[in-house]
Picture 1: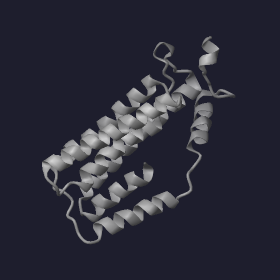
Picture 2: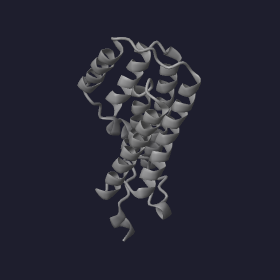
Picture 3: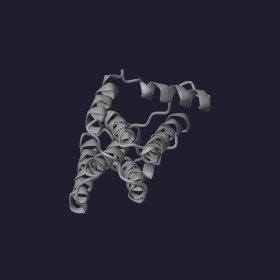
Length: 188
């Protein structure tokens, strides 16, 4: 989803909507920061909520709910309200479907996914609210090609080992030697 988020920013920049691009980047980075902080808090200070089967927010669920609806909103900006609303609804449905798969295949618990989808939806709906009050991006013949190029540039970046960095940050800040881990087997 990060390459798609970058392509959205490129689309907004190519459409000469600097303020809107800034809002998108700030909202998206703020949401990612909340997800990262929840992971650091769990790894360093054992902030799990056992009653809810919750450890930390899901980055995958957050990014899908934040990015996919915004992608359809931006791409369908010049279409009728009916198409744009349908695209956003489809994007929300896809992100919920991805959340269901995260739970189904036990990557995250239902509480983690639901919280992450709520946060991602707040980012995407907040962006759309701001976008509706500002001028739409001006389309040119360079908007789509520039966005596609930026998508592939972001895809080509070597993924960082962000989870390892979060563990390092949690250990440094908490003073622990090992990150806190929790498995359902411990509860049995």
